[in-house]
Image (cartoon, rainbow, N blue to C red; front, top):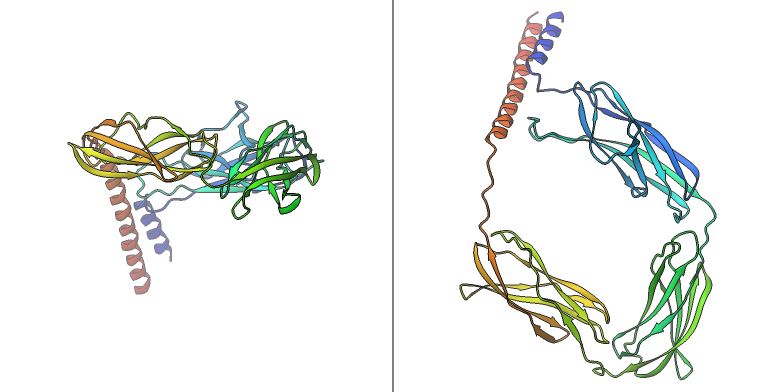
Length: 401
């Protein structure tokens, strides 16, 4: 048995790259706190422990519910950690965790992880390296008195066509201490009789912020004429604004589509075989919703070589969008792109684009890196073979004895 142990030891020494010992740890494994108050900052200490034989570069990150307001801080510099750090071999490093709770954070439980990810350096010769991730948990309970209050300075509505959506807009000013979304209760009437009643939730609004909210209603199947809408805006179920708005639903085709658009735009540098994103600025200056997209024909040496069709987008009145399209030239040379806008059954010609595509540069081959990887792979294979041979001999000797 003594001879067997000696042979196993020699085998491991002959194959230093076949096995690796060590690892990283994170302490504590969980941070759990209750009764935290919004708007306050709480700091805790964590440690990264290493039993690796060499220094390790690691990246620190936060995931989960608090990823935007939890920060890791270096006690030596008192600065937030944004770049990878070095953990010395067989040592530990401490860091502060700052929970900076926003003033408008709602009550509730917030959970997630602190993560330590080993950074694989380019100089390492490991074949198919694996980045190890170590995690610990945070679990925080936030309590406090929430105030969901607000005001509604104004409400407006615009006439529309039958089949087009009606949009009731109102300004909402959040006077509370947490972010929340208001709701609008709307009763549509015609000639004093109820047509439809509905409720719409608005956009999440931060404290001391004003956002324009929209309550949308489908006019399909409700005829034409003069209507009224009784609107009540509520914050946390309490009415904060009320008004009665009058509007007309006109027959289809009453309003004409009216647009304004810019010239098509592409990146300055174009390479053969590379996909690029272009766009056209599209402004809806009319009174009805429009669906719009870009279509282009691509010419090289006066020959049609490709047709580009962009995705269709909805653009509501008074708004604009960047209508995107994608261009992937197959070879270097000069191209002409002849485009047009297609919107709600209409079209508009665009300015021709004359572009030059460069040949794609061949990637440089890093023979040194390849040699290092091959050398590392060979050492690993030889190490494993050495272990197998010695184990076979040890087994034979033990069997014979």
